[in-house]
Length: 538
Image 1: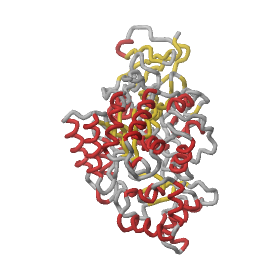
Image 2: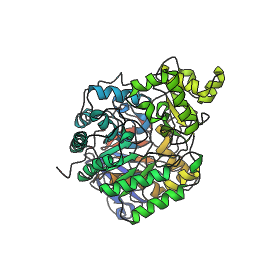
Image 3: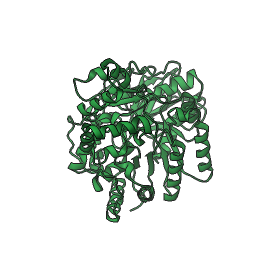
Image 4: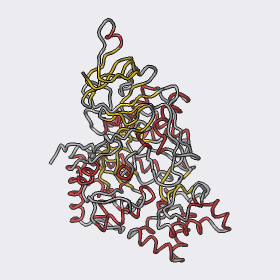
């Protein structure tokens, strides 16, 4: 007998096709048969060791988080209910050009400091890897959900060029190409960039194009956090579309939002740009999260020149009064490149997490609110916090627009990505609520997407971008990464006030045919593994 039959489920298969009622049989970690209700009439129904009554529940493929920052969280927290409870069965790591492989000891130290606000300091992690392949092997020891990896271009640049704002030499460019190729050979699915983060932002387009040609040769895709989401955002999107065209590389636009006052209501312009590119033959997708606030580190807002040389140099500049005044002027008057060319509005910058145990009073307040309590300027408060917390503070930035969010999620190449940062006392609720929020708020409550269409955005479409031939659909022979949810009650429990509240209406989640969520509770199963792409070129 087979392992499991899921009885009388309303199957939404991830293709966008209409739902149907069926029994779905799982054995050996795969879907072995699907018996539709009509076909079962008058026939003996399939039997299994275990039968699960799915009456009133939707059965869909497991959700794929196309933009995750769980690079250390998966190793630190075997439970990982933040994602598992949402129905996420696969996360894509290595985002925004900064992660932990490939590295050497020097580069690892700089990366850990620069993204402590995303992933924590890492003091509780045994960094027993240096290459991409070794990191994926570490994941294979057992994790809560599956994970794929993008080679982080900023980390590669730090390893070869360092943290300086200069062009790579021909020899350095050759070494970066080799490192990207090695990462793809070892199983990475593509390459990411963080073009408002140092040191990745110091790369000119000619350098990025050369690296993207390597990515394309291995069947991967390029995932840039491009150079602006504020002033110049549309130009930045167009720049990435043209770069990918020249490189012949598939493009996936990370957290494709249009933020700040300068972009209110401009989503139709972005979508027209993308439609023109698609009509011209571009291989293009994007991801978004269904919230208006962004999330990053406080240090990321600084002008790039202030971060040249790495975190230690950034801290040195912040402690020098004259240099700190130049930083303030760029931030508050000019509009720094780290703040997307828009002068910072301290009313929109909320501290969501700190590294130091004595700094918790800042969390949950905007920089301006904390400054007012101290009778000082916002920059004085921000500067002190950056120095005392060694660049670790994470922030929410309330600069988005709901009409833009809704318009972009409707697009035919859209996929879901949480951009979820799990660190901090008060993280962004998207880390705990992105996928049930899509199903509850934007399907059931607002009707922005149909159920079938939304599930395709979260499953089949991202699996196609990742070129995973046996994931993302409810189909015979596919891996049994599955979610059962109640379409009448599914909702994100997380909010800005209570960001770690679990979702409702998702009683069962399976990975490789094993229950990681059962009756709404996390089991002790660690069924996740690294999902590697086999190289298509040598």
